[in-house]
Amino acid sequence: MNSEHQDVVIIGGGVAGLSAAAALAGAGAKVTLLERRPYIGGRAYSYDHPALEETIDSQHVVLGCCTNILDLCQQAGMADTIRWYDELTFLEPSGRRTLLRSSWLPAPAHQAISFLHAPMLSLRDKAAIATGLARFLGGYPADDTESFASWLKRTGQTDRAIRHFWEPVVVGALNDGFERCSVKYAGKVFHESFLRSPQAGRLGIPAAPLSEFFAPIAEFAQRQGVTVKLKSGVDRIEHTPDGHWQIQTATELHSASAIILASDFKQTRNLLATLPSPATDAARQLGVFDQFIPAPITTVHLWYDRDVIGLDHAVLLDTRIQWVFAKSRIRRWSAERGCYLELVISASWPELEMGREAILASALQEFETFFPAAKQAKLLKTSVLKEARATFSVTPGLDRYRPQQTTPWTGLYIAGDWTATEWPSTMEGAVRSGRLAAGALTGDTHRFMAAESPATGMMRFLSK
Ligand SMILES: Cc1cc2nc3c(=O)[nH]c(=O)nc-3n(C[C@H](O)[C@H](O)[C@H](O)COP(=O)(O)OP(=O)(O)OC[C@H]3O[C@@H](n4cnc5c(N)ncnc54)[C@H](O)[C@@H]3O)c2cc1C
Image (cartoon, rainbow, N blue to C red):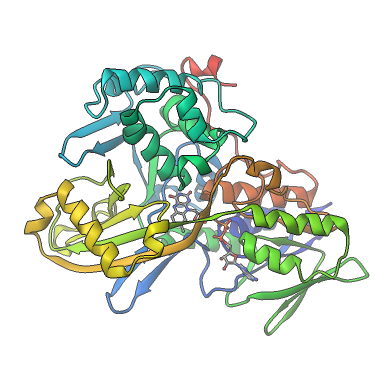
């Protein structure tokens, strides 16, 4: 299909919808993006808290291997709003620090020197981790049916190797426990972050609140010709006998030759259910949605009168809190503005049941164990943000239910981090899905995809 002659409506202004819109408009299609909320960005958003007079978001990070979102940032002229880090600090409650960072050694040995010196692991732990990582040198399994829990057992991982290495990385990246993560996606994280190349594993942190961070992407899409309509929730879609699509919001009826549903899996199911189709394909399409498990993330936000951690970010070990981000440092606030910290609790099902005060009290107690200086500083403001449907879990066997971006309905495409992208629930997965849907619509599925991050050193020969 020739995109120049297409009228396309995209439903959903998250990262997936924005990337599809920018790609298609750039290829000459007439694109309208309908977003039900008053802002774009979807789950990657920030908001102004009126009582606190602060802008709050849940910290999102990228890795160097996230080539499609980085390409989109480049196109939108905002790549330099990401702050890059080549090292990760792991902290034990005793205050002992381990620094994992790249050295002059070629991949896959680039982190070997700091790994061998890591005080958080014994020699036995390191040997178990090294043999485990060696299994991901060539890549990761194509089959996603084994759980990471089973893999850890099968490869004889020690208790401390699990607590101090496998768990912080897997739970932080995939947002669920080992039973509900497949080896495929855990393996992908380790292959890309620790083995493939120093560049692929670099940690990138947006240096602005997320809505501010994503604004240039929306502006870029608009410069490409996309019409963005906020507060335009779609209630119903319909396929007309002449092959067109009608899209009904509360106040407007849109018509298009093709549509991309770039909404989350729950909303996509609801919209597909409005199609009056008894076809078995339709039934199968609707059935896949029951397989997705939404996973929560809770973040605790703390404002102190002074810097209490002396680091931009760190992984905390043996606690409920997985990460601490010093947002005031990452955003280069002046010292007079004080210190803004975010504590991240991944896979936070227990916290969903807890009240705000209880979460705050427990997080503060843990935090002060790691950073006793916090006890001397003045805690000015606090906030707790629960995101019940932050990501979906890459449960073993889920791949066979993740739908392709094409559907049984002519002219109807779907996008979203949950569709088939070979990525877990991430912004990179969302951009890939949007670009794949846009490509499929033009008849050339991979047309808008960025190149993968290259393997370097010995990994040029080892990586599949
Ligand atoms: C707390 C938290 C932390 C995270 N951390 C990271 C991280 O560190 N790194 C990372 O890569 N990812 C992270 N993620 C995941 C990341 O945010 C998502 O993978 C990504 O934003 C998904 O984008 P999407 O466009 O697929 O879906 P969504 O963001 O869900 O976008 C869907 C959009 O569709 C709109 N919509 C739905 N129904 C309708 C309708 N009927 N009409 C019109 N519009 C509709 C919604 O309002 C929404 O804007 C995190 C997510 C959360 C919540």
